[in-house]
Length: 176
Image (tube, rainbow, N blue to C red; front, top):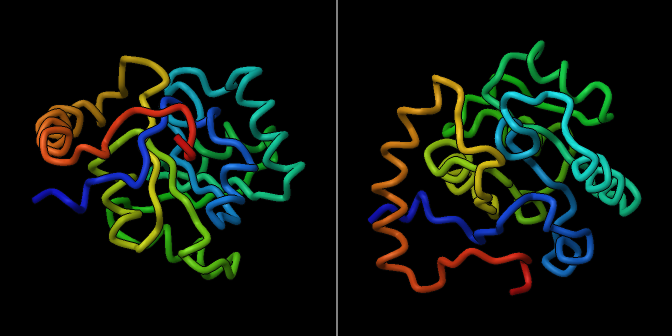
């Protein structure tokens, strides 16, 4: 039950994922949610930690692509200065945004990873698309109004998964 919500890994934060870890798992591109995964939903400018992480991915030739349910103008406001590509209106948990990335970049789903802070959208959607997933802790405790409903349902699902899957543990690396 609830296996469609079970992440491949649970990592404290996206910035803990290194190019070396990704390469060891055959990952050629990182798909990421925007709000509370890459940036705090209420801080679109990001942090020095974010800039350093993106720089390390670029130096390793690992594209970082934002896959978000937000509209293009919201995403562009954030990623334009970061030099990242994105898919807007991805319609997660449906597969639309993930299929767009596969087609545009011609990267097989086995070489992609999706990083997100929500089981209901990021993890479920990528799992349905056959993409490995990383659940991260939200960057900030608060959420935008449209996320609060999902968080209530997620608590129930997360508790169930933690009780029934001993491999679900918070880690600091894909290799832990």
